[in-house]
Length: 310
Ligand SMILES: NC(=O)c1ccc[n+]([C@@H]2O[C@H](COP(=O)([O-])OP(=O)(O)OC[C@H]3O[C@@H](n4cnc5c(N)ncnc54)[C@H](O)[C@@H]3O)[C@@H](O)[C@H]2O)c1
Image (cartoon, rainbow, N blue to C red; front, top):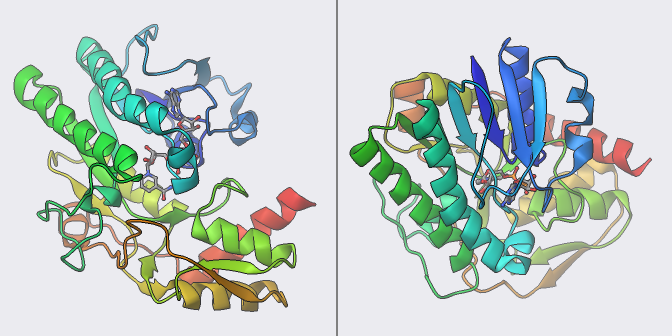
């Protein structure tokens, strides 16, 4: 099998490339490095089954040879990135998804869209099943990401219905692990980096808002299962074990042995107060569930950030 991964130099894209290569497939990685890093794929350079193309996917995409799959992961993903890159985020979700679907159609390849739990916005239903349509503020600052992904899902389904492209949609919930960027503003990397540097941990709001965090290997396993399944409707992949942000901060402090204090800052606008996947569909359709406990995953992520800062 030969697959294209867009966003290959990013956190999730690079792990996905690793997994497809480990499964014996050929991978073409594509990225423009807007939020990704060459270091994430440096270990793949020289691998005969890996090719890298530097390209902005909002422009026409051309790839030599046959493709069996297009996995569309290109998009700024951390709140800090998409608030700094609002137009690029809207463009990659809309124009980029259109171009990636066009390529999948031309190559008769299966298409998998990396969507997000953010399509549920600030949810009024908890936990969130895929049947929930969401509570999104289209004109708030986060709307650029949420609405781009909602559009991406809509155009994916339109290509399925109108052009018979074989599509899959994964709604990814908060994921963490090695290769997250140190200063991308995501809560897990923020806390770890601040704790290791002995700086105060910045907690937004009183820390009572809940999150659930999935370790990257579990997430990639769910995505690969969905890719190989016959399931056309969106599937949530994430870890349903829920923690408050304060609990997470305290756990990071304990695991790093840091003496840092927790400082409280105002909650950003439209920040979801609760977020937990209902993974019934992933369990029943894909036989998937997360295996890595938070403590175990945090230890691996902490070890990565220690190596990075050494
Ligand atoms: N990490 C998470 O917890 C999470 C949660 C939900 C959804 N997702 C989705 O998964 C995907 C990957 O997220 P990530 O966490 O790896 O983010 P990331 O920022 O690490 O990776 C995204 C990659 O896409 C690339 N990219 C962005 N715009 C591009 C463009 N126009 N052309 C080519 N490349 C472009 C970036 O350079 C980067 O390498 C995104 O689509 C994101 O929305 C991630």
